[in-house]
Image 1 (spheres, each protein chain N blue to C red):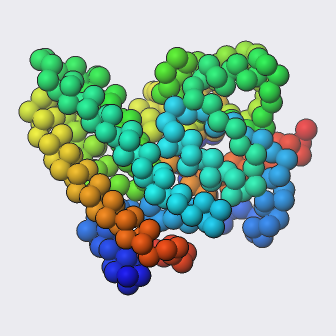
Image 2 (tube, rainbow over the protein chains, first blue to last red):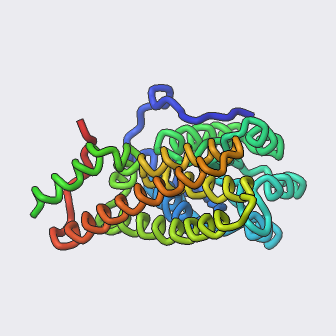
Length: 149
Length: 145
């Protein structure tokens, strides 16, 4: 599991914007955050990359979606949320056997809290706000993962 | 009017109210979502007003619940960072340092300064978006030199 605050765009393969959008058309993303502002922001970022986005307001909503048979390629999970926080939701999803890529996105600054969140089952961790470089990196890793499967 | 808008925008960066994150928001705006930035900023002001009220109430209690205050400010700082509110973010950081060291006077001072910076930012952005609406759609975002 790797945490990162930024990804160098020079490490990414050079593709046209259209190629990137076309490659991502079948990827479904769940944005889990209690902030309407962050949900709107991440929704917009992800749609720019051609992704299909659904949002959940807290960890319990995210877990319930999976209980009811939804599936997502990528979950962007906030940590601090009411009802069920991101750490608990991540543990719950992994216990359920969910193998989606789960990326923690939070403004946590305590190394212990970050470590605990990673250990709950995250694949990656980024501090808020996400940047286009972060998303490019995440999608590159997701595509690698999907190509392996 | 476009020139006036451009000058207003530049001054927001030059005076340190906004940072590069605001430009990231502008770059997301497109013809399909022409008011995206204003909508995100409006959501920020709505969230922030609630958090500031929570913090004001928490600062009335004695002794201060520093954990609670830090929690509120953590959320506030996160939102402020997301829209590029540079000075507000800096004041939030200072407030959190005072919380963590249990410095009640420092917290009160930092909170007053934060509200001042927040109020200034809010006024300037509201004026900016009002003029932007009158001016019509802008060209793509430019990064300050």
